[in-house]
Length: 430
Image 1 (spheres, rainbow, N blue to C red):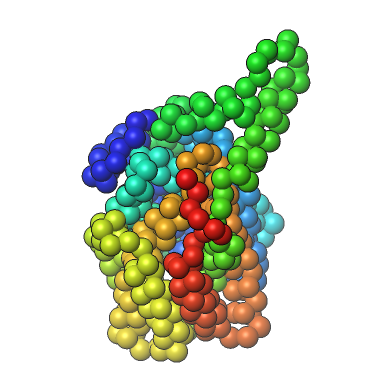
Image 2 (tube, rainbow, N blue to C red):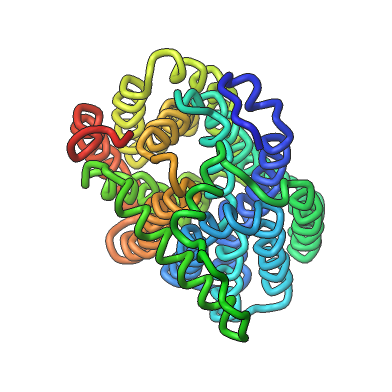
């Protein structure tokens, strides 16, 4: 994979096209299951509580996060294709389990396996795009396009499955079979990803310094394990020596996804039970919020490449905080649509700018492992968020998770203000 420095060339690269399609299809499956299907299916059909749903969602995010760093490390060594195809087989298994299992434990395990299956997605995408962007890190446009694929899939999945449920008189088995077909299709798409990856000529040199042995010993049964141990130790040593970020980066990564974790288990339930929005109207609500985000992502990404990330993140976090606070207070449906559109605008500012900002903190060496490490920290908020959300919903009030998310967004605005002035401990690593 050769270095490209112009944003337009990144979008036309074979790797980016294949990764974009893979990301889109995976998010169709996840969006359909986590946003539209499982909350209602587990609540109305199986009679499970919001707390149980929150735990199941937390397990999905736990599986995703536990394997993000290892999958980023593996992608640089065994290639994107082998890493993604192996993981996506787990996604297929998870959908099969959801079709046949009815117990809380069985569905929770299916969610956990679903998370494992999707764990390499963002480490692979971020590693490849960061490498393609070259030393200037002009990747806001590419980050916006990736987020467009993710949000497009996340929106299309729920809208499409809600439409299918209405047409089949709420036949969940038909919906699950469609998602099973999508899981098979995404495995086929992932097979066109590159086999092995060389990032800007760095990997071979890095591995020759960190893991190569001058005189190879005679192979034994333990040789693969020994080489794996040496490679992991070399990776960890290089990460410690090159990563030099402000410690506030770590809670910021957590908070950024904790907000989404607070909202994901209860947003569908809240619109159905408190706002009394029908499935069709809910689909329109998703289109209103998600559509404006998707439309704005590429233009915002180009503006981020031109003007930097700080302005967009300052404005995005503050607008998101105010919008989520208003969403928890207002029940007028026309006003709710306007608020959701404001949330969409705020996320269109946040997503490409945040990923571009984080990309500037990634040193050239061990990009896959460090991206995986950062994304694990960022995704850990998605593990804790649903559990906290279920507790707030069951024991305080239904609007409580939205108030909590507004407070966290306001906190992120403050943390980012500090980080924008001093992103590194001392000076940027060269």
